[in-house]
Image 1 (cartoon, rainbow, N blue to C red):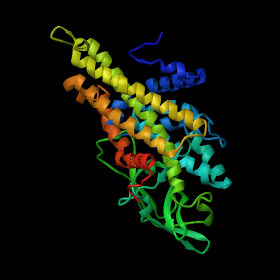
Image 2 (image 1 turned 90 degrees about the vertical axis):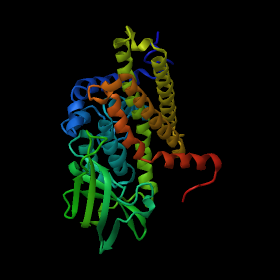
Image 3 (image 1 turned 60 degrees about the horizontal axis):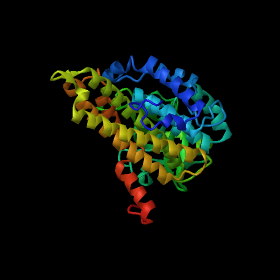
Length: 387
């Protein structure tokens, strides 16, 4: 019999044995390695870099890619892993997303055999770290107008420009940098020890504190002609990678929401006011019910999206549905959960406000609410409302 408090619609019955076993494995990792430490990591703004090789050994890095040491897992399995990791903290899931869905995905989809052999095995094992440089100080939602340029110098390339809000850049071994060329936007595989490349962590964040986001400066970065990703020209390249990351986000956001809900469900059953548990009050029950409704619906959205992806039938605009809905609902769930905790909810003893703060970043990156709304609007009406 399903536990209505944790899986009201018996969504587990829609999962395979292999998917459930993977979930249990990642859940144990989160319980053992993330939950006991996340409060101090978040408060001290520390990314736990010692976890990287552990995540590699679990097959979490590039897990949905095939070959070169990657896991070859299904889209649903990758989504389940994202959900469990973000139940621990968005910053940990973000690492897996940047490493696998962005940097490794770009190399896997569009790189040369040399690129794949040089970088993917080490990245899958967690021995090498990658980042993905698309967003700029003046171009987030409008990457077509990026200012970073790559110019030919004989058979070589020279890159100049700047990138902002680039996850992992200050600890990365390799950066995938997108730059304008005379032929259009292209991606470049840039070892971070290349002269002229520098990355500086952005300090004093109110969100994603157990993660790393950086400014990148590119000053006359000289690269061989082979550094360019040969498999794509134009925004189709970075957008293809962004869609991989957006897909993981729709699962991850539900993990954060679920953790916040479970935290306050236990609290409300134990905390007494006016001589009875908080859970006995009608308004508290309404909040809990609203959380269950949205978590179950959002999980079904993610699961159906994953099944479509595994079947090869997923369209990019369908990913916008899940990213927009699930992150928006997850923030509201976490904020509502904080109210059940009262004043105690503003401390790091409880997860909901930490999740809510993190989700403000998740809501912004890989496409804002506004961008995904207009992507859906174009799909529904056939009329583009932005260029």
